[in-house]
Length: 470
Image 1 (tube, rainbow, N blue to C red):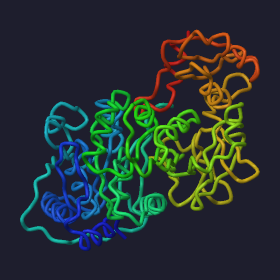
Image 2: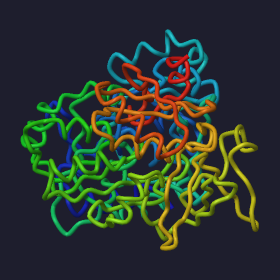
Image 3: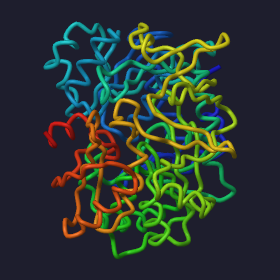
């Protein structure tokens, strides 16, 4: 079983169709990507790369990256992806944790093996040059053979290595594909690499973002909208921070569908999307690095009862759990298991705190508080670690985001009485205080801004928030 098998079948059926398009207009067709990957694989095979060898990738996201991924999977190698949001420190951490046999670099990244101490002793240095003696040979691998190793963001501690086997990624791609499959010829703007891999197996064209993926908050709405038109994009797979930016533009993006995730999708953002993109289907996807997807929600299917519940302190509706996952609530925490749920971290580091065995199955602890309602829908209550007094974050934050004049809000962990930090128009302070009284004994603290995570700029950085308030 090999992940690229489906992609190669698609490449035979649609060799001239664009597979990946970069923001500068550089594109590669399915056929070209297949041929390029074959040439790369032959070159790297001659350098001793084979089944099970770990290869650390230090490359910009682009057509060459996906050709390299396909080439390494042809060889049965295991790809190591450093966490991009962590930059230089993330690269060093990935090298220390995985001890790769080879490092693959491209462009200015070629300098890294000479300046990163953890890469000095890596035996093999690879570059994306291909051989003219390419063949279509594919290394047979088992379902449990490791395909790639990536890392958690490290927002709640030291980044943990996540091993994804070929079987795991096949199961994940199957879940993702059910959301992405379409009877139309779609062109997707994709800000999540996992969805590009899924699209390669579906024969869907993926257009890469025209903003820095490590700086979502600095993206320009008018530039994105012009990009959507220029590239003929019909669907967007983007984080909530980019959705927020699009809703602030006077121009109206012409999109058939928006898939958003990577952070909480609050009701005020969904309202804005519906107002800005009235003819666009909006789907919110909930998951984690270790288990994605877990649940999804179509905005059009949110009932008035659910809207009212979110706006009055019941938490955040995540929707129905997908059929392929088992979900349970244990001591307020959401725990999940399934074929696309990570069962163990690299070298077992982190398993004690994040994995539990129930009924002979390994379950992943998400760290999110939640509940299942009478209809089986999943509601998020926020991070367990961010509780303040008797309240989980989303039981206060979701409601407060709907108050007039609020631009962003966050419950400050470990405060008693609970402290609610609000960034917004302080002329509404008295009104906020009155509404907070209805939710409980909540103190309000005005702040210039709410610090957000570096990865998608979509989650509150509670550590920095605590420092800011203090």
